[in-house]
Image (cartoon, helix red, strand yellow):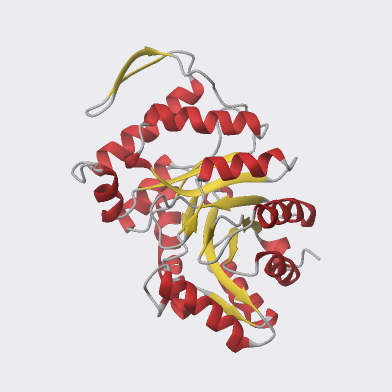
Length: 306
């Protein structure tokens, strides 16, 4: 069995880069990823960044407009820095533009997100939970009345509701054990972040599955994913050097090259991805960090898509 037989495979849409990023690269990867059979295309949200990073909704709208079947998702949108009405409307519109292909993964973010956007850190978990509840209600109900501690709306109708019923999948990309347990009750899927280590992912999966069972949900039907920053090359030193630049200049964490990323020859990369599947991943977001069109082909071969 190949990797594609064991897990759903997502591909990162080129959108965040330390080098120049051409629109032709984005369109080539989007179309080719669909042609190869990847399940979905993904972006991140980084409004303030050391490199170039495109707005997630704009990038995914472009990708959706030039494809027909492949899913379009973001992992993660930092939920507490957005107003839920605006976010619900944006993603309902993306779901309309893509004809029901949108996937929204949300997270709590880091301290700098609250500082940059001048949003209070206090009660961020309460804000997060209320936003999740309110977005779901806006997506599924004709008129919404919601009375939370932070958000209150009365008899409100969202200007556009999603195409997909009951609503687009709402995943969570969170890492703290308490947050992982929340994902089991609040989310439609969970994704380990690219900056988190492979060991942390492996430790989180049993926590998630136990919480799913406690909530009466079937762990085998719940998407469990990991974003994997990666570099494939027949010259292992080249692959490692490319990934190390990424973790050094973007994450300021050179040890993440080995702890969080996967690099090496096709055989080495395949073995490490198989290890994540064995640890419980049923979806992998494969995220090459350079040479995007070339790496897409290499990753597809590793995964058994060509």
